Each structure stands twice: as C-alpha cells, then as structure tokens.
Length: 362
Image (cartoon, rainbow, N blue to C red; front, side, top):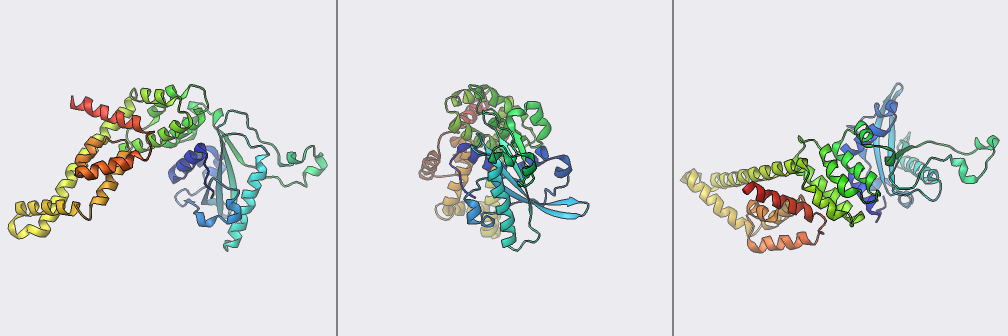
C-alpha cells in the first residue's frame, strides 16, 4: 500500500494499523447485524504482498481480512478503511470502486475462490461538509429510467465532526482509539486543541499499562506538534495539569525502578550460578557481576543502547535511565545523540516526567 506524506494519513494508519484499535473502530461504526458477526480474533491486517502493483497506485490506507458468521455459513470479508482529512474533488465512489474491483481481482489471482467480499469504511474529519452522493451523479442529470444501468454500492461514512464526546464514548470501547479519534476530530478547531488535549487523557483507564499509555500519548503529541505547532506550547503547558497523566507517570517510574532492581539481581544470580557455585553463592555473584561488566564492553553494549533508546522514547528521564542500564559515560552520550536526532516533539513529555521526579524526591 502506498505511503502517504500527509501527517493525518500517517497518524491514522499508525493507530488503525493495530488490530485492537481497528476492531474497536469496526464494532463502533458498522451496523450491529454486521459488527456482531465478525470474528475479531481471526481478523488480520493484510500484508504488503497482498496488494498488487495496480491496486497500490490507488490505495493508501488499510485492509483487514476477517471471517463473518451467518446463517448459511462463513463468509470471508475484506474491510477497507480509507481516511480523508478533506472532501475528495470527485465522487469518492469512483475511488472506492477501484478498491472494490482491485481486492476482488487480487483475491481471484491468488486462487481465493470465492473471493473476499470488500466492505468499505471512509473516516472523515475535515472542516468542510462531506456527504454521500450516488454513483450515477458522476454523469450529471441521469434520468430515472437509466439509473438502473449504473453500478451502485454502499459504504460506511464516519464523519468524526458529527460525534460529540458522549457519542465517542458510546461507539468506541478502546480508550486509546478514542483519544486518537478525539485528536483527529478537533485538530482543525481553531485554537481549541491546547485546552482540549489534556481533557482527553481523563478518558484513559488507570488499569492500563503505564508505559503503553505514555508511548501512546507520545505518538499523539508527535502528531499534534506537526499539524498544530502554534498550539503545541499550550498543549505542553496544560499537560502537567492532568491528574491522570501524573498517575501514569508515577506508576511508570515505580515499575521502571522495580525492573531495574530485578534485572540486577537476576543477572548477578545467573552468572554466579554458572561460574561460582563451587565457591559459594556470594563469590559466584561477585564473579557474575564482574563478567557482566566485561560483557557490557562487548556483546551487550548495543543491546543496552537500544533498550535505553526505547525507554527514552516513552518520555522517561535520561538521568534516571542511565542508572537502570548501567551505561558508560561514552555510551550514554552516544545514546542521547542518537535520540536527539529523532525529533523533539515529545520534549515536553520528557520535561514533565523529569519534573515529576523532582517532586517525588522532595
């Protein structure tokens, strides 16, 4: 599938490219008689190799395959999700018709008989109105007696601008999807995102994995920093007022500290048992620690740098991370230089975590 340079497209694909988010989207927008019959456990995102070269020229978004249970058996369906941040110039059904035929032809070429039935969903969040139009309208004023000669099909139009906060909660059971869709919905609202974004975080469930939530918030922040840079300073300023975000940061810091202690004990005991059982557990653990320091200079240096970069990407403070991974000064500085090249859109989240550390230490 073609890669888009549009930041709205990229963000949408990243969020809906995750199976749990896509399943939540389908449950929330498809008619109940359809949504309730899909086997979401067996649903899969179709790979790049599935899409033919001719279809790739027209397609930029996502295709999921899933079995659908019905009274006559099981039907294979292909769920196509197309994202739009502005209304198309021409009737969108012309584009969707290419998708429909492209998927059917691909299925037949790959020996899938019968082919999967394509079902299309268009998600729109632009400022201008976007309404469905019949396919025959492409040809102008077609008289009634000729309209039956024009192919016609339906699709699901999801206009996020028509969903208020309550409707969002009612439709989408994935909290992370809901936060992302709220950001998409409001991104074109003038001077509104700075105040709105911190309130989105209150939607998050405190039972979620804190590192996962911080990573998700970071992705949304990167998107907002690119599309509404003039509002981003206010977003950062208001982020620290979110009690929910503070709770997630506290939990992440606690878990990271616990993992650091457990990692040190595990490595020491492992090496101690391998090299020093005959000299006793104490001497063995000392030997294991010595061997671990030597291995750090060789095989594990790169792994530790990678682990540090992944942790920094969640917004974890660099000074705290250095102690967890036991990096040398040279390796630590090298890691920071690599991380700095990835952009600074999440710098506010990093500063927020560092500030929280200072508060906890006090």
